[in-house]
Amino acid sequence: MYARLYGPFALMGLMTLMAAFFMGFRYDAAAPAVNYFYNLLLYGVFFAVHLVMMTPTCKRLLYGRPEGSLGERQIYIMVTVVTWLAVYALHWPVPGPGFESPEWLRFLGYCAMLIGVFGFFEFANYDALAQLLGMPGAELSHTVGAETPVMTEGAYASVRHPMYRAAIGTGLASLLVHPQAGQAFFGAMIGASFLGFIPLEEAQLIRSRGDAYREYQRATPWRVMRGVW
Image (cartoon, rainbow, N blue to C red; front, side, top):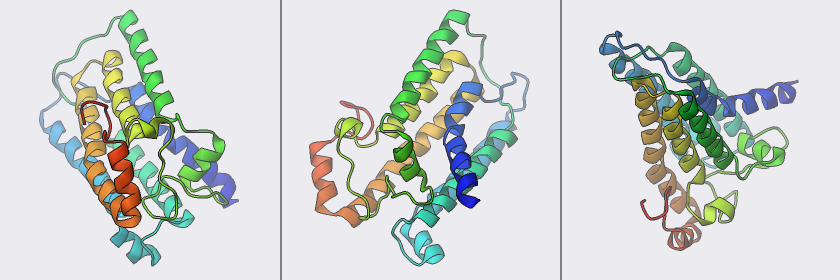
């Protein structure tokens, strides 16, 4: 029963970030400026929980081992999905500039967002998603521990974090559909958190993979955008 429930929940949860970009974040030109602070605090709590749960120290305290496991991944996914849905449900509208995007620009924006979604799931088939989400009976992928091989093919031969690149690109494209302050504010926070994860994640990868990951860094020097960073 648990396996039957977890699979659909995890798959739906994986779509919630992209769905938030498509639906848009709340905006009201007459809203009080203090709403920015509230939303920053709300997202900060989500980010802090997400950040702590990915650390080897937390994994060791909760699960007795710093390496990834199916049980750890499932709890991580469930907590991340629930807390992100809470952010989306509870965030307040923010004031600032905004305008109604013309139909042709919204159309182009949706097209660009779909390209971002395809980039985010470039590696994916059902088995790959099962590994990413830690579905019961699947092998794990996308872990920082030595239990999974370093991904170096496909998009990972171009930049080291193609999923982050695609998510940030989707957020930028969403401004064509929702050109207003709320979308820009949350897009900036989400993009900054992805970029902030990279040094922490790569430090863990170096500790667990050593020379194998250093060699990958030399072969693929760009993190999220070729020629930029």
